[in-house]
Structures are given as structure tokens and as C-alpha cells.
Length: 78
Image (cartoon, rainbow, N blue to C red; front, side, top):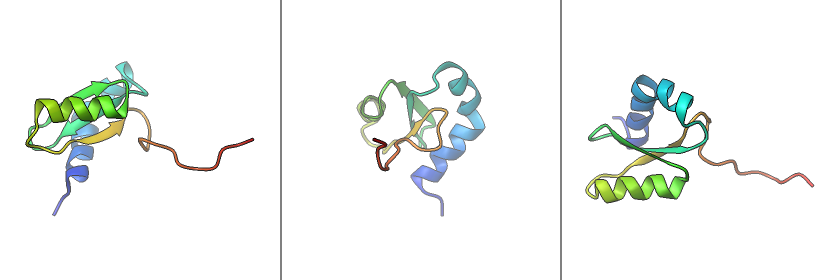
């Protein structure tokens, strides 16, 4: 059984990656896997809110365009 994240990643890789990485690298895309709609915004929160506003009955999954992870959590270098 696939998850919302699995489905959104599949949509991203199959349908969106090439164009989004060319035009929007570093921004965020919220993908609603049930409708296959996507919302590109400058920040994680903006993308998630745009998707939720447009499709309140569905849960979006947010991907940072051109990166392996939406956030980096780790120690800071001093």
C-alpha cells in the first residue's frame, strides 16, 4: 500500500521533476497526489498553504525542488 508521500514522489519524478528543476530549483512544490495537482511557492509553508487552500479535503506532500530533502537538520559549523 502506497502512502501520500510515495504517490507524490512518484508524480514528481515521472511528471514534474525535469521542468520544475529547470525553472524553480530551490523552491518548494506541494503535490496533492489524489488530484495530481501541484503548487510551487518560494517557501515550504507557502506551498503547503496554497495546496490546502485550493484543496482543503486533501493532504499535500511538499518537496524542495532539486534537493534530496526539504530541510537539513544538523550541527552548525562555527
